[in-house]
Figure 1 (cartoon, rainbow, N blue to C red):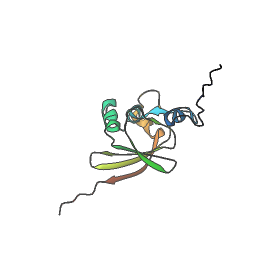
Figure 2: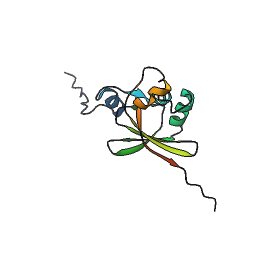
Figure 3: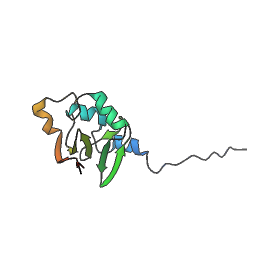
Figure 4: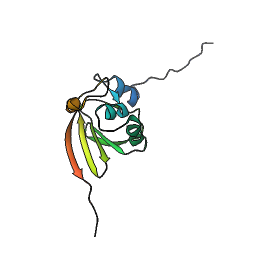
Length: 121
């Protein structure tokens, strides 16, 4: 008798694979934050991501980044606290190495920068 194995059909690839292959360039979020000089060290950038302190908006949906290996792509909006200030930037490009201070503005555009509300009452 013939064996009738059913093969699983996949209609869509997994989300992390789709992100890696869709539309061109991607980069790990910890690398991007460090290369764009938004984090002083890559270890600090990885810690921000691993502890869920980064918010990412893609196609109008906001989610919390939970791992340093999360892939970002052009057009993503990244929000995070740096000290007492909340920064929100849009990914505009990628760098192969850490960008010079004069060139970092080519990697992102600032969406907003706000002071955290102080409750001194």
